[in-house]
Length: 105
Image 1 (cartoon, rainbow, N blue to C red):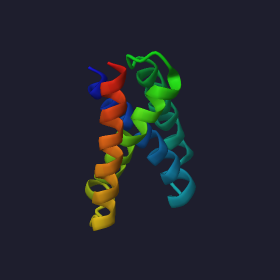
Image 2 (tube, rainbow, N blue to C red):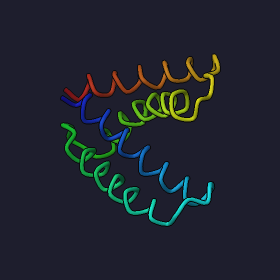
Image 3 (cartoon, rainbow, N blue to C red):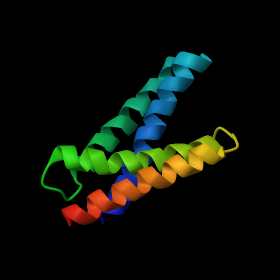
Image 4 (tube, helix red, strand yellow):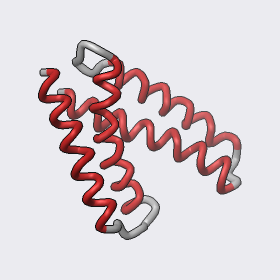
């Protein structure tokens, strides 16, 4: 359950940040900020649903999931080739998140 919440939270956060990126860096319409704000609100709500005894632990575990999700976004949305260092870093981050989630269970 926690893994799914983290995964959906990551998707919502990345989508929200991407909307701001498009408006700020790519000159897209300010209307991009509306779904961006909604996505970021969904992100915060989903992260608050994670089953842990402390917000900080939830945020720490989420960081590894976000790292992996960001690299998937980089590859499949931005169309960039992942570097070996991207993959190695993601493995360490995700393993750290798994340990934190496992310990809190």
